[in-house]
Length: 118
Ligand SMILES: [Cu+2]
Image (cartoon, rainbow, N blue to C red; front, side):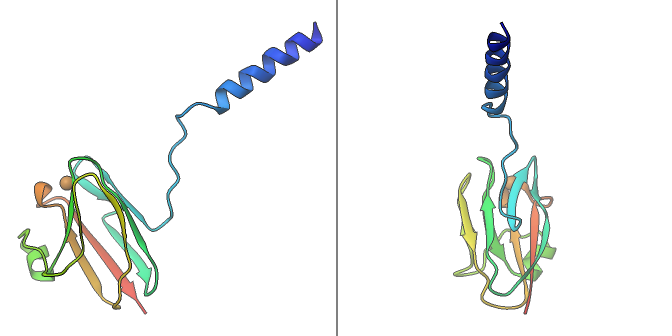
């Protein structure tokens, strides 16, 4: 009887630990999307660090100039960084400066600053 109780207990533990409700754990430098926001909307990193992106299906991301960022103009920087809708990717900045990103669909709300220090 004790053995049976132990077995039931063991199976219960096993079934609880195997569910898929655990929150996904990403690298700390990961930008995700929630409703109409990048999460976080600003990130501070060091030169040489990698920023990871996990975008929801209704969001894309484009690098824009500081001026277009402040004026909510979704015109991308030529040869700038961008990711398509719902895609995951990563970005390795090669300069210590602030990089500006937007999701064109959800301007003026959906913006991201990546501050890179030396
Ligand atoms: Cu968006």
